[in-house]
Length: 230
Image (tube, rainbow, N blue to C red; front, side, top):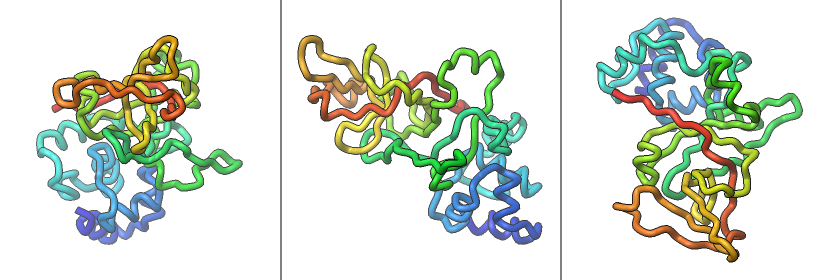
């Protein structure tokens, strides 16, 4: 896949910088995709294919052909121009353990210190944005694993309101319980210093864990999620 993207880009005499401008994907992230150090999401396949005036199937065979065709017919969910976007699409992966961190650093001009931590923006109609009071504090990130099924299907993108750092009421949060960034349901145990860390997929993951509240770091509350469906 990496070689195909690079070959088509060079055949069209397009530099990485120009491709980054056309797609809204950072130069650093594109470089990692071309070197095989980063995977390629379905959304980014479509954006890169459009920028290179190529068919998605020319870039990768990692996706079902029918899915690529349907996705290519849809308007882009993530704005190709970051300035036009509403919510940053972070490349930080969360899951059943061993994830990254939501300590994203910004420069004084509002740009990310590490551009590779983001690969575009999600854009929404005004009717949707009206329901999010803290739109500028919401971040989108991908979820791996099945510990939160059926609430969050594997492969979902979750939207985190980072102003909610105290796990009350009981809900689904982005947190670190000692093994990296995870998405879990959190519930305070009344009249104690404990918190229940719950996987909704109880069939596979069993009973909740109980930890001291000081052992759980909450990054934000899941306020919405999205998943491609075939």
